[in-house]
Length: 143
Image (cartoon, rainbow, N blue to C red; front, side):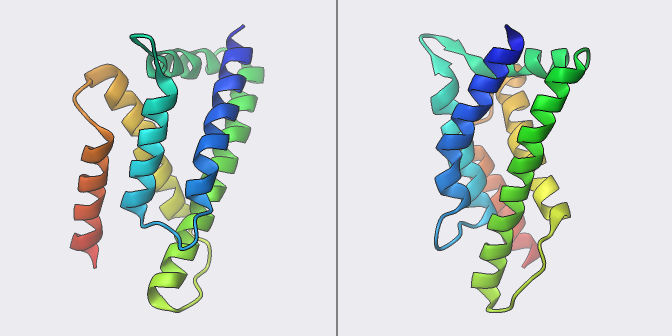
């Protein structure tokens, strides 16, 4: 039952966020994380219940179930790869120079997305707009 719920949820979210990951022109990291966080909020909000809390249970169960962990791993590896492609296109567009795919930057961006799910479900005081503003501040500080 948990495997089916996780698979359905991850497939549904994948379909919703795909246009953001493949947008032309590519979104900045802050815009991309903001759009993904908004999509997560919209997808997970169900009649007064937040599926982000269920996601935490799925992550926990994946520590006990090799099959569930393998299913989730495939999703997250593919998602990280799509994030890497989006970041590459953004950097290429922004600088006019072709860059290599940066899996480290994609891993960091994936951490922002997963961290948003945890903070939203556990702490409850973070919004998708908080993520946009925070990442935008990081983008400006680095440039």
